[in-house]
Image (cartoon, rainbow, N blue to C red):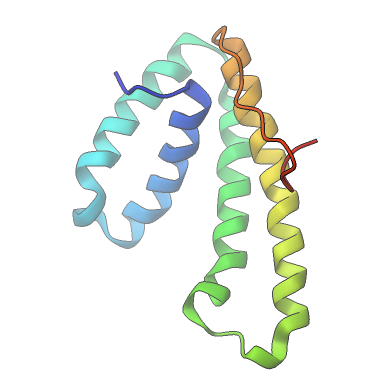
Length: 120
């Protein structure tokens, strides 16, 4: 068992799905561990829709961050970087809500962000 909330486990698992597709050997141990835990959580509660939401938001964030992370956007494209940052914040807001819903289903108190762009 992994010592973190169910929502955080699912969130990390969906990120590992993307990372392991790019570099399977590097992430294999974590991927297997999180996959086993995610399967257990999904079997225990009906969270498929929330898992799909987290996966979708993480994929959208991954794409938006990619050009920023690799330096593909020139310094002159500050407006585009700002636009992406706002989209990332909005996707994070949806992702955080889905994680909190999963945590509540498992009887946990969700992590609450204060004074943060992804907080409501």
